[in-house]
Length: 181
Length: 456
Image 1: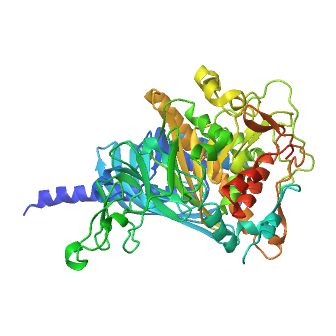
Image 2: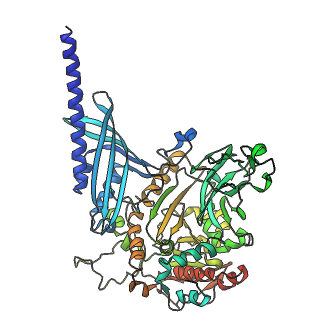
């Protein structure tokens, strides 16, 4: 009874599971590149028209929560195009980027990955992250937040066309942001 | 530790350009700073454009007091301590927003945006209607004033008027932003914490000796755009003996200063305000376009010295004005070894949207915690603080002796300035003023002790 509809349902679920697997694998590979300081390979994951944005968060009353984050065109922590991301990477590779030499030790944990929409070519993905950083003897930073990405299907993988990074901090509790998210 | 005037004099030697390292970590000195500097000075709170409508508020900091800066119904501005008259709870816990009233969520005392106590739960039942509500409003700051839209306040009712406090040097510092047009703050104040003493962050702002080294990666990578192009003759900086840990030369082919004479100008003023950095016409000036300085309005506002000042103004104690991009950065002391940095970014309200957006993008990429430049500052300041607090290391001195005794002070057009090479005159002046503030003398004595002399 209902064999064909079960089969159909099952095919859909399998496709969703495969997609979930592909997206997760993409993010795990990305995190591995960042933690290995393989920045040029990381940059290659972005489309040429990519936008990389980390707004400033403000403590607002609940009734004004729509104004919690700054918008593109306002002040931000990152508001980069691919050229500026490339500039940041070139900076790290000058041999004179003192705040990253000795390099920070980072670990990017990416979890709670959810496909919000998928039109076949363009996927909206939400993922939680925990970036843990230690520096020098005992400096320690921890950033937790959510990324809202737009991924584009390219071949059997993806490109990041848009990344919005929302931190769970208003006053940033670290002395800089010399790493990527 | 109780500090005598003689102890304080020993902390800073203007003649030798030396600073006692204990001032960067000693808790007793920090406590005294809170009282004698942050309890008295006019402190920058915000800009009028951040709170345009009645009820708009911005949470600012004065020393360790949190204050609410609030636009009133009559268009005026008030600043009040954010603490309930009853048991001290905050009456507002948002960073900014718009409010009709402020409610203390502990017992329900509620206040108007003007700070008046409006309601007390059980006023008739439990207090028998006998509390004098008119005496229990939110405590206003002792004085509040604005200069061209910049809102300042002081805890000291005897402080001189803001314009006198700023003097010609402080006013020029703010004019270098105000004269650019109808300036408004772009939404979003970047705030972050650096584990350093606040004075290390302040003394960096005049420091045009550090960029070509600290920010070498920014200049070499081209991440800020093409490197500054030098034209004409200039003297190169002596780099003999300067090598990196690898043994390679620390090549400074690209930087913002040269060893040419009269590339730099330092302006010093009463109460410790100062401006330091390149002249407008020098090759070290990083302003891409200086034409705004030469309009009749700007020339009138800046004066003949101000037109040539392209360095960084400091409004004592903690407000840094930067002209490229147009920003004010506050160095808010949290404890002896932690400082909160706040960035306010200004644009001309009349600019077309695409120009505005371009300028905002520049501000985002240069300064702030991820800024291509500022990324590398924090660790220097943090380590300079941490490595100066050991038993033996704190017995050493911080040196601000570059150009000591060689700065001839020229007094013209109401300003005291020193023309010359890259120097540490600005830092020396700031520490000298810091010591005078720390003595806790009268305003008259403080002013007299911070009037520029002949030589620095």
